[in-house]
Length: 335
Image (cartoon, rainbow, N blue to C red):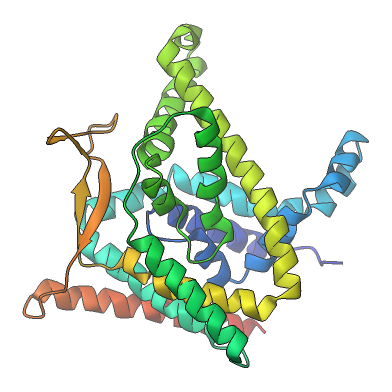
C-alpha cells in the first residue's frame, strides 16, 4: 500500500505535470521522455492501466472511495491537472520564447534529450544481442519518422479519432512527439491550434450568457472535432497504457532499449539549426485562425561555427544536459 503523499510531494507532482504538458505541445519534444526523466513514467502507465472493467464496476456500484484508490486517482489528477493547466499557461510562455528565441529554446531541448539518453541508459544493465538489436530498431524508427513528409489536413471525424489515439502516444511513449506526429498527419493546426482557440471562444461566450453561439454551424463543427479528438486521446491513453503495461512487465529491458534507441533516433526532430517550411497553397502562404503562418516541416542545416549565435546555442545545449544531471543527482540523493 502506498503511503500518503505530503503536500510538498503533491506540489512536485503537479509541477512535473506542468513540464509534461508543456513538452507535449511542442512539436519534436516528448512528454513521455519528461515522465521518464522525472521518474513517474511507470506509475503513469500503471495508473492508466487500472482504468479497466474492475474500475468501471466500482464506479457503477458507487464505491467511489475504492474507485479513486484503485485507479491511483490522486496521482492522475495531479499529473493530468498540471498538464492541462500548462497547456493554457506555461506553454503560452514557451510559445513566446519559441517565437523570439527559437534557436536557443531548441538547443535547450536538444541538450535535455541528450541528457535524457544518459539518464535512461546509465542503469540499464547488460547489453546483450537482443537489447542491441532493440536499440538499433528504435533508432531506425526514430530517424525514419523525423524525415517523413506531412500529409494534408483532414477533418473526417474517424480520422480525427485516430489522430487522438496517435497524438496522445507522445505522453506514453518516451521519444515520440505527439505534436510532431500530428504535423505529419496534417492535423496539428486543426486539432491543437484552431479547435482549442474555438473552444475557448465558445466557452467565453457561454460564460457571459451568449448561447446563440451554439447555433453557428462552424462552431458546432469545431466542437465535434475537439470532442472526437478528446475521446480518441482518452481511448489511446488507456489502450496504449494497457499494452505498455503488459510489455514492460514481461520485456522490460527490451522495451527500455527500444526507448533509448527511439529517443536517440528522434534527435533529428529537435535539431536546433533548422528553418521552418510554411504551408502554402498555389504559392500562397496559409495562416491559422490567429493569423500565424502554419509550419509544414523543417529544413535542417549545419551550424556556422564562426557565428557567436552558434556558441550561445552550444551553451544552452550544455545547460540542458546539466539540468538533467542535476535531476539525476537529486533523484539519487532522495534514494
